[in-house]
Image 1 (cartoon, rainbow, N blue to C red):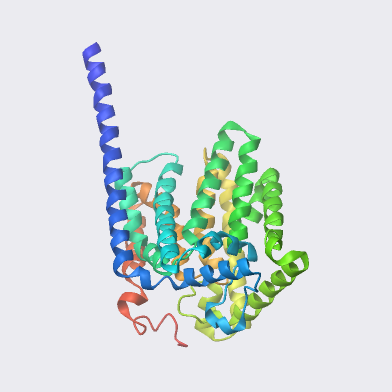
Image 2 (cartoon, helix red, strand yellow):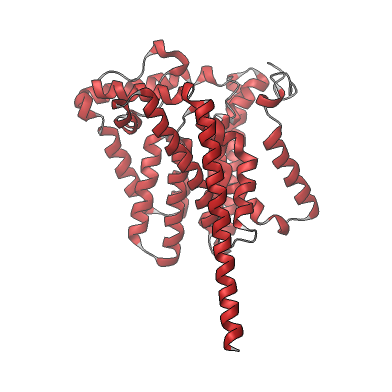
Length: 378
């Protein structure tokens, strides 16, 4: 009996170790793949990072971040976001690109790991979940690396926030609410689309999260004053507001903009009508989220499902929801894959078709005339 029990325990440990070895092997393979991608393609690209790198230098020199002559490559984030790139601005551009590339690649790996870790129950082998999610959304991950964007960093921050909220649900620790709020505030300060969690926290009555998050956002607004002075900082913030309001409408028709507003602008050619239609869809989506929150009262970990859904909605709701921001759907995709066997037969077929379309039906493979029915006005 003792021998059988000991053998069973040993067998379980071997299975756990084997699973970990498979996961480590997958992450090493992805690291090598992304390394090759950088060496053969990336060192001359990462145009978005170059814009942010330049913003870091301008902040260091006390110069304005928002210049009309930059046109499409104008810095579009809050002045605080330039602080993140400030240390890299002291380095050679190629060295800075390499460091940022490694950071983004590590964040992508972190997104896959945290998505799996946040699942209440894992029904499918972890290595299969992670591999399938990466393959389905791989083009968005590689596009993020290709441009040197910051969305993977923001997504990982928001997943850490959700992790703390889930832990707080179990432990009732107020300090976790404070930390989750500060992480959320940092994400908003880096990219305002993370504000999508603001109404969610209101509905959930997460007052500590809101207060700590608002406090960090308030502090972040004045951090650039160290370089501009108090009055100069206010001027730069106003320049950000003006540049965003002036440049955003012209970007609705951009090929890479996948937001609801951009979709309707491309479809109708009428911006006012498009804003109304997008607003209607957003209101329906908001109602769906409220319905989910109401039903989620009966779940053990409602924050996971609700948070994953909000992450998936960010590219659609954000006016500048570039297609590569769909990497934020990674947690949601992994959740669907994890519960795949619980779907009906028709549901499974629909999911497979959907994942196939996400992976293969896109501009980079099929060309600009591949789907004229989606944008008849183009």
